[in-house]
Length: 187
Image: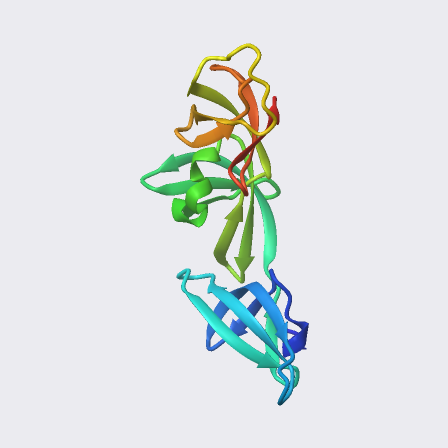
């Protein structure tokens, strides 16, 4: 694994530190009036989700880990385990549904999921950035209500609550951003 200097750490980098795998969430480069500059790095453990703040000087060396990304197709869920199929080898793997966290409701049958592996261990899974969902319930459309920044609450068919513009009605399909969990546009 390549070693990088402490001042080369960027958000999104995966580092091996203190015997664990950590993802750099936030990096601030600090130049104090006295002493050398350093990078203040907020990290999240990829195995248990704990957080850590660490200082790295430019002379410090850290191991940068490269995760292998595989496209896998979601087949079904069984007892809290997601059953995914590798589209190249057609091998089926079971991963815990906690890997998706709060984005789990957006997972749909046949959806392609990008799973990140370190050696043979699945550490992270990500959904497509935009998915199409149907609005299960919302307030009725009010004619003439065209205020620029007014939104109304809506419940999607998967149970997730989002805010939608006033012109969007019940049983309409909308596009939702799975990263921010916000309305994007009509489908």
